[in-house]
Image 1 (tube, rainbow, N blue to C red):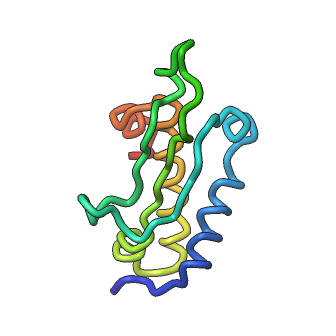
Image 2 (image 1 turned 180 degrees about the horizontal axis):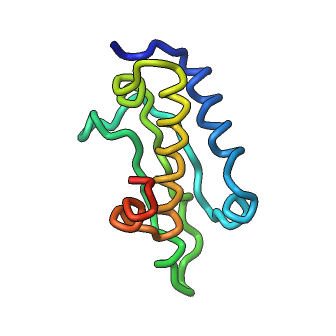
Length: 116
């Protein structure tokens, strides 16, 4: 059975996950915003998604663009978890996973590192 949780509480968990990032990573994040959304319209089971140009792909002509977005999808995360503790863990994993994409780390490397 999915966990029931208010949007406010879920947003707090995402904020907590961001606060847990090592300072050097938090400081290196550039032109990116993290958003909580209910679900992805085209892939409703997706837990999170990075939309943008990874730091490793930005060239000297990068500038004047809207911020990249990291979407954390509330409904699918709640659906795969059975306890609030599982939600906390899944939010952390999803936030780290999507931030890794911002830094240019692909899914294969994330799996090697145990974050897949």
